[in-house]
Length: 145
Image (cartoon, rainbow, N blue to C red):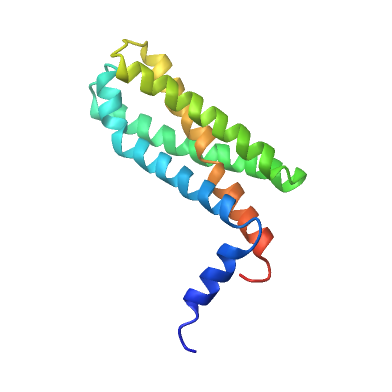
């Protein structure tokens, strides 16, 4: 058959160990994209008014995503501790989301440094989930890819 994608996708999804890292990858992308989309609003609420500063904080979030991915991805490459690192990243991601979400939900006036710290922590924790779990999905599906 000339359309092999559905069969290939089905085969990958049925491969033991493939679905969990794929879901983790997608969840991380969803979190980082949503946070990126609302960074300006969050920073305005935290008292930042200059757009150049807010843009810099948004860029800082993206840098935290990349640096976290490089550092933790390198660690996982050396140790193959996919699960423990992913679970640690999820725990820290949920903590940072909870911190920022509770502050917003209860309209708490957190210091700006705390909001920025929460944002950067979130990036450094959520970002590495993507490359780590993409690598794990490839590891468990090889040579299917």
